[in-house]
Length: 194
Length: 328
Image (tube, rainbow over all chains, first blue to last red; front, side):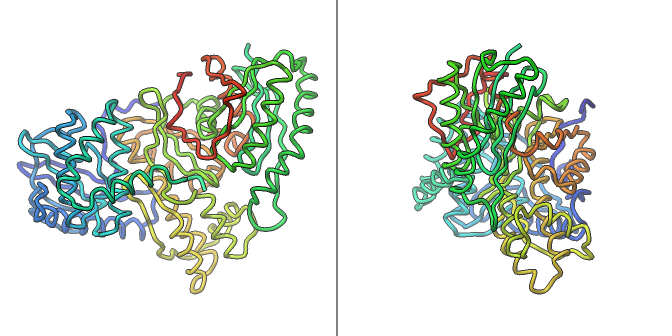
């Protein structure tokens, strides 16, 4: 068994930090057939760039874009800590407000985890829009929130309080929040063994 | 030495085995084979009811030849779920009858976790991210804080089910997976099909439908190939994301669809690129088998995790992340 002593490696992209900018380049996956691999990487790069900007217009703090080309995005480096490391009900409530605004504008993040939310001491920035898309479906928003709840449940001991706090913030910013949160419960209960 | 008898029968395969800490003492199986179409839940349950007595008798004969009597057993384990309700109830009844008549404690085993634990038993994997893929289940699991957590899973149907549905629409007989794999090897080109990963979850029902539609303009070989490429890439992508998220460096493949060589190859490539180790147990431990139920039953029995017959109801939606892991 080989010991992996390098820094934790992201799954999708190589992220370099150069001066004040983050350079995110989607790397090819050898396990995927080339045509599929390039299509996925190109689509995700473009979608990510577009939705990072749109989210900011909705009042969700996101990095400023500097350049987009090929499979690469250059953007602002956000100084701070992933809320995964400093999780608290207060931060979860703020995260709920932020996602409420995002969903109000029909943007689905697609990978809501506590690693993708960065606290800079003043506010939470949302990063990694690699799997984001536009939708006004209750189901899609429900799945988005469900994915976050799964991360809270799998990564944090105190997840019930955290989920409760998230819902509080989410309801503040989104008028049909209850409909979506009801759907989240349905998604959890849904038999996935059919 | 601890000896546990385990019975599996969540779907098509009825299988009973006796294991100790080191190895399988003996296993006897009887497989339900539908005359046409896929698994009919009632017929499968009737099959299990019809053959349970004979399978267990045969198992007792076989272990007797090795000098082990039913009196030597320490516990009786059974698949409590998830699975087809009627099948689970049938096997549950058999296990309760054995437990009461032999006066041995009963252990209710989660079928998904049995796949995981048999893999950890029979490969060098210690703390892996597990990709568990079968007819009804598709999950990415890993251990954390006293439970196996589900990091990603299908939002609709299992990958095996998706393959079977597509295969049936393409006029191939059940089970479709091996036939799709065979056709895929003769493909000439890739046909674009949906690729659906949402966060850490995946979805296969749309892919199955789109692949069926693609048969109208592309060869069955090309569609089978492209179906596999997309579906397996989705599974491998989520497995890789779970590795990145948890910081673990082992991958274990479990479940019947794990027999597919293309899926193994893709996982192996991904693991090589991340310096992770990749483990696959022997084929007889990949599909549903009694040994895995007996083995997890043994681990649970030794950690005091038994149930009363009165509380031993089956659960068709038994989630692996609801089980307190007492054995690690």
